[in-house]
Length: 460
Image (tube, rainbow, N blue to C red):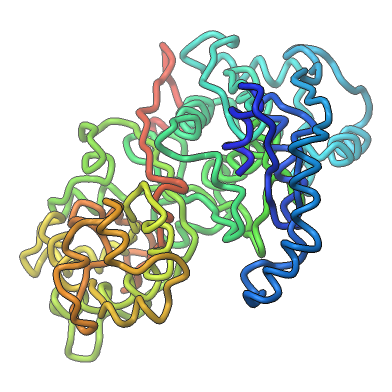
């Protein structure tokens, strides 16, 4: 509601932003990021979704109505000024390692873990691996509406424990973060989404990413530190702050980067995920995708059931279970759901030996990852399926009949499934990420390498 109030205030029309009391600080920070401080907030007491209609009516009459009238008639002056920040190369603190960490932690600039102090010398080492000037802008990031620059990418890369050679990946990540299609401004929502970062191309080997056993474990510097960088950058530049603008009910911690195993893909004749996203084979590409619900499907080779269809049927069932509740976000529109399914190499190989191309896998899942409309009616928080069709938020297939037992697909089209191959080559497991639709929509960016690129593992 704050984003609706801001343009009204700028046009000289008084507003009153109704927010649940737990979101007042987020509303204030969002208003500030939109250039309006002291934006009038009207907090609703308690958790509105748990209140009966009588409780709702009573709260509106006793706690809301007078505040709305006051906000619209005795509106405080709205300060459109901005807070001055230090220059990019300004030294803000001097001290020992422990003192620097204590200072950064006290100011909310860390993730609670020790950071590498971002000295000018260290930052300049990172800038050598940027394919553009240090002053180059990558876009403006909500909720703080702060400029993303090559310089502050390097600063946060140092802090996260990255190596200077990771800089091209960090820049591409921030380009994806700043892309309006990604929907960055929504990431402070209560489900507490964590993003899954996937990397493709020769750079996987050149920088030492782990694309085999334990692909989503810490223990490899590139996968771990770049994953940590994403969360630090969300905090320090975008402005997602715990208890303020980051309102995840439980939240989560950053994920390490998932590297696709392109050697395994070449053996079975499937293209990498980056090609599915519109790039050429051999391009270095990074993809970001929201991942709110996730689970591991283990032992997909049932006793006497190692054929492709039995594996895909298990995948279809679990994908529906993981993704279905996020249908609420699809019905709020705009945005389609794009679950990401990670197959271990031996699972992908078994499916390919069954005669399935990656496109055929997507088609099969589209036809079989379906659920009875009646199941949705028991789960839904927002509008029913036919209302979503009437509003144009979802395809007509979801309201082709009124039969409660009709089966409807979990995604709009086969192309909505993101298929990735990684993980332990010797284990028949899969990892499924339930995606959020317009909140963290998958975005891919090509990684621009500097001239004279000579990564540390190029000859390994």
